[in-house]
Image (cartoon, rainbow, N blue to C red):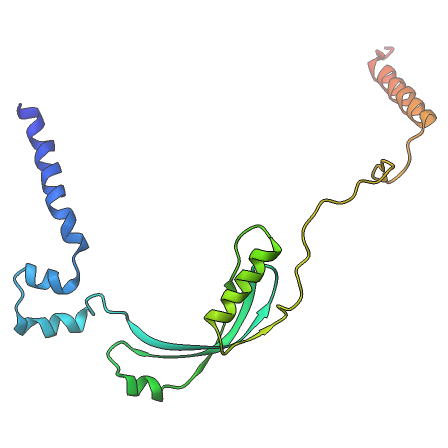
Length: 181
């Protein structure tokens, strides 16, 4: 019985402390003896799960790269998380370009068109450039009537092969002879 006491005690203490790791900063502050008076100091050090910044993004255009990726060209403005709406509106616009995956399945014309319609719905103000052309369907090549082998750097011939075997045999015979003393 004594042999199992220490592992059980360790397992119980780990099990009891595990949920504490999932608490937000505000709950942890009050759970560990914090008060409303000390909350402001703790909040300055930790934003308690609030996003670190506020941002606004506008997509100006989406350029077709291939049947699953598009390049997004737009503008972005960012302020710190404590800023209000007025500060966000006053912030300068920065260029924001990134690749966007809009389709992730095997190419099928109808599904691809539906994905492009979803892009139009998600970004109504953006210009879609290059999406009017249909991607080519990947298919198998038509078999040819004749088999073709890849070309070798030089063509082998029967006599060249015979000469090579005879030459190697002669070299082996010469190397195998004993020297006359």
